[in-house]
Length: 318
Ligand code: GLN
Image (cartoon, rainbow, N blue to C red; front, side, top):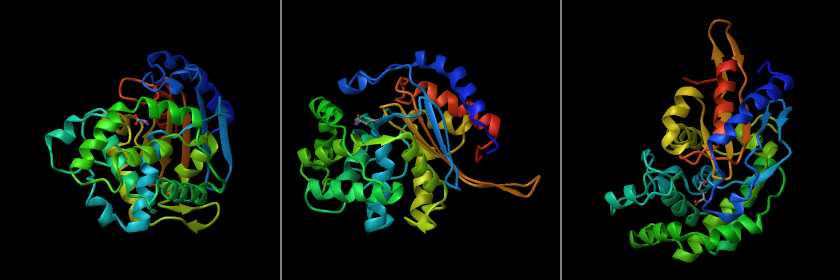
């Protein structure tokens, strides 16, 4: 990507005004308190260099971005076939925490692992028997990707735990359908713990790069998860990663991505052949943070920034 920091900073300035199109997540009090004016980006290149612009020295909780990572981690441990017995790979067209799709198709499985019902199911399948063991396994998987340990934001965890009424209701539905490998409270605990893990933009961009390279870390020269799992993960990110705005995101940005209600977006730009020049455009990992989210639960200014970036640098895969 022939992009300069100056260009990126200019885009940040142009897109910062879009923060007014959203609001911080109000249903989790600790997230509601975030500064809605922040906008930052970090791009990780396959040679290990980083481009940072705007409010890039921030860390924030993974929230729903964790869902694609727990899916990859459980698939890597038990195989895709086993996981896809419990969750499907279909978009819903409903909001991420809706009970409707699950209720209509009872006793079916959740539509996909990126809605809350699917993610709670997958979290309960993380390797280990206790929630502590499952959490350890998940964070050691993340540590393999970014090379450093991660920790929970205790305030966000507590805040989410106290207000998780809807997720608790979903977990009871899942329990009734025999989809949970834990009891309701433990399943919620591991799910909320994974959502409350704090990450920097730079570490998130590194994860985006590894997904773009099909589980291969081009900096460390290591295959960290299977290509076939990465392929399904990217399909899920394109079809469901931005919830019921996934269609528009695919149309205007055109790369696999996953958002979270804290205002983070993880995007993976896979390498692509440019037929006119027969050159390979290398892939990138992109992480964006701007905590004012829109009605679909996606960062408002973050989405607009990615849209502009995709147009200028023509990185859509479609
Ligand atoms: N922890 C959040 C919830 O369960 C995650 C949702 C999201 O980021 N979209 O509501």
